Image (tube, rainbow, N blue to C red; front, side, top):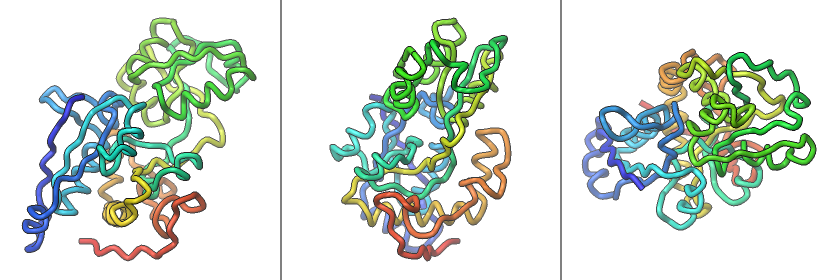
Length: 279
């Protein structure tokens, strides 16, 4: 496991230095191979949307943050074991996960999208996947979708520890398509001419939120308050444009603030009205 200490600059308030000195660093985990959300930097360490986002969250909280880079499949078990305070990795909020963890509201929408090798016939429906091999990043909802639909569509699953390996399987012809989140597929296509973004599965839009253990409600709410402030002042929208290539519209989660704490209508949701002190 590679560990990167990201010493977030302290918030510009009189009390922030004392606060930072009296509290330990925040600890979070991320998949450091999941570009453009988190991936190695030529200067050392990791870079990406998630790194920018949570460095800024920590800075506004007057805290330092330690980010561990590890395989996604091990992050939730490590969180539950107490190794992390929360996960910096983009984590799809499913009803099953929300029953076991606490989540912030979504800061990005995710939906399931396929990427294919350039020159391959476009996917127009799920039926075009019948009998095909699909590559995925191990331990993700994308793997779960392939497993759940394998018998119905006669799919073969090819799971990898990293997303780049899953994309390479498509380029090399070992898999027909790669299934991942829309932001990752778009980014991979922008960096790899042989790989193009294709069919998005209807009805698969979910919150990408930040998971905490169920005993961390107070910290969850503190982090969500900061995220709400970053939505209101346009910070998350600017980060999204930087890393994903386009400014999010008014219907996107980067700018929408949701009532209460956590994704509405899912387990762990707290309807207490938000009232963060921003600025």
